[in-house]
Image (cartoon, rainbow, N blue to C red; front, side, top):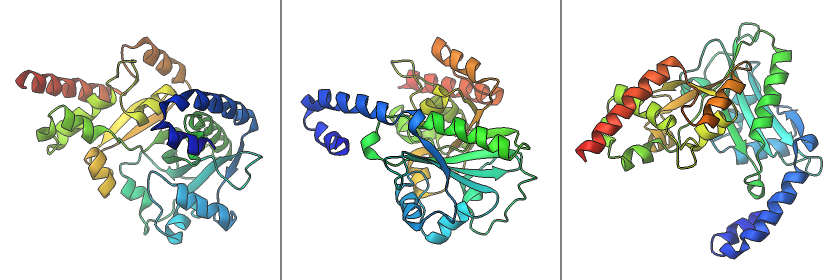
Length: 292
């Protein structure tokens, strides 16, 4: 019903009050205490696997072989939240690659011919895709709880893991660069990296990060670890971000401090390397504004 309501809301803003009531009710029904975490494997019922293929919204799953490559190898994991009233319908799921060292491109993670790693040799868990499944639950947040629970489970299962990072898209980067009149700098990798860092550390009028994915991770206590040129060579990656991606890092001992930085409105949590890139990126931006 709410999925239908959200469609109607576009042309009937007076329905906003009804939507607020729906959202309040659904937040109560789908609170964390009712959610069940399940690992999705190649042995999961096909009816659910079909839905994982359909609901994947970050990196399209184009075949059953592609899905098997994401689920079956020992160095791959997938976890989903379910609700007891909807046992056959995932609410949100995250795909995880176990690696040795930091990932630098989604091509490497999703390569069909890659060799699987021995899980005793991995030291990093990479969250490379998080997909919400139910349009009617838009605005009902599950991502924070999902990441925290998966980190806890993985740390118990694989005590050799030392880092928990993402390999994340930057959906608004190209649009922002074009809007600022900075497209001439996008062809140079160094300038693009600087502008990317400037974009990721910029805020809107509400003092929140302007990029939606950055907003999600930074509001959950992550820090910007690295920007990655050429990390997504797909058509979507080129269209959205000139192929740029970003690593966010979750470190248990730093989450509270990272959130405090964000709430103070002075800066966002980032590595020293990203800080240097962002400073130079803002300089490029200011220079372009003066010329304009």
